[in-house]
Length: 280
Image 1 (cartoon, one colour):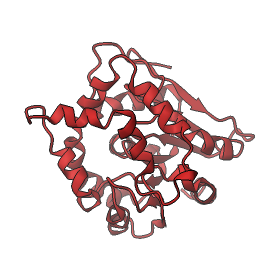
Image 2 (cartoon, one colour):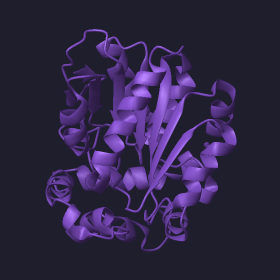
Image 3 (cartoon, helix red, strand yellow):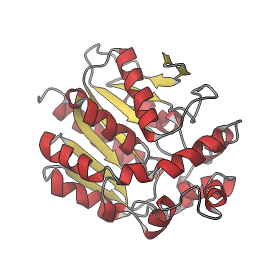
Image 4 (tube, helix red, strand yellow):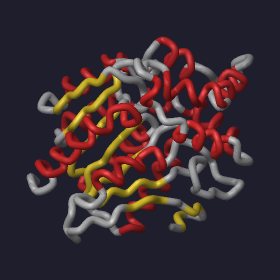
């Protein structure tokens, strides 16, 4: 789909019912819509699952002059939603999907039928010490860009899948290998550096996003890998302050929880969609 000069690639399931609940899947770093391929296969006949690639990720193609910031990722995602004609959906927010998703929610609260939050942080206590140090990097900081680029190597990409995972045999190599393929495309690393330097803009909005949760009290399902080296368990529990009726499930795994615990998480998502879709 063409959105403001960006060719947005997306994956979409074709459910058996035309009025099936809609789940918008917002991927994380350094992945893309392919991270949801098993979830789409598992739930796609019952629900309409839609997963776009952001500019700078996956198969989406952005013009050379595109400005990479979280505001612009949200702009393109909002244009994509409008292009599909979506007016109501449950939003799955993982990692980068949280700052993109909360920006959409702030702009269009009427779109949001519910939230599925999987290692998508919106609280200061949900930042590990390493994450805080990374977010504090600025372009003028000596060695900052080299530090960021260290995450974009095969070792850095693979580590994001494996850190915090007890049984590494559960991690298929396809995810991080495909992520690395896209990271190595021309211009992609500079796009990721720009987004890393902009990440502080998300932390600065945490108070606003928490206020949005308290005001709108969306039905919320939280599934969280507690071994996440970036967003530890306190970030999951913090949501209960603002949406105390949220359903919380913790898993003994890392950042990419679907890679190891999809058989447990997919039924939780299905049950949540069934409960909330017709509730409001």
